[in-house]
Image (tube, rainbow, N blue to C red; front, top):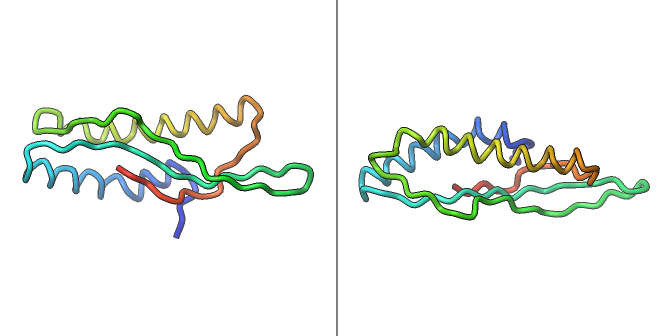
Length: 107
């Protein structure tokens, strides 16, 4: 089932992301993570609904190791906040696109 907002995504996937990352760091001593979020957005223009997919990502991967493991929660929340900010910016400048669903989260 698709998720509707970045906030609901974070509630559903954060603990899983943190668990998998911690396990990888325990086994490999470090892990490189990169965040991405594929969303389906829509706009209603003169009674016709248009859809498109948009990919949000953090360009630079982050290396997680035993020294910065305690920052995982903050790093994940920061990405969700960045995406939420980009979506709000679309609304503020009048683009009119609205998130329909989150298709895929990569972390």
